[in-house]
Length: 157
Ligand SMILES: CC(C)(COP(=O)(O)OP(=O)(O)OC[C@H]1O[C@@H](n2cnc3c(N)ncnc32)[C@H](O)[C@@H]1OP(=O)(O)O)[C@@H](O)C(=O)NCCC(=O)NCCS
Image (cartoon, rainbow, N blue to C red; front, side, top):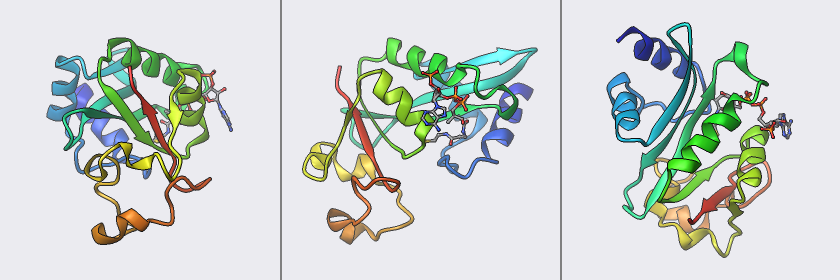
């Protein structure tokens, strides 16, 4: 359907999003299964967010949080975030240092992992794929829990 194709095209412009997993069919499937939500205006998707499956069945990743450029700053990311939280029964994680996303996780009482609590989430769920550190070196990753690098946020209902 056109609106999903347009959404994927918009998401592909964003460097911060993990792109290979994003297809129209996958996004629709997440919505169908209540693992994603979106806001729409005039038949176009203007905000989106999803709870992605991770290789560890106990954890989902809150990801692909996105608001169309012309609609930013109007509270839509908070609306999407809160809807995802409302429907959620899973343990959640996300890695970001985007200040707007950090504002959301703080608002919804997520906990910030420290270097010593980072391993609560298995590596396969947190740092895969990672384009900065080789798989074998991940347990010594210098970017973990460092300001303006990788901050891991956790929510356990
Ligand atoms: C991240 C994104 C979804 C945020 O949406 P947005 O509409 O731009 O967000 P807002 O301007 O409403 O800001 C969200 C919150 O951060 C706050 N905020 C804005 N700028 C901020 C700053 N510099 N520092 C701290 N908080 C800030 C806002 O006050 C708002 O708080 P509120 O919800 O309590 O009102 C959007 O910018 C986006 O799509 N970016 C591209 C994709 C992306 O990078 N996604 C995140 C991947 S981790």
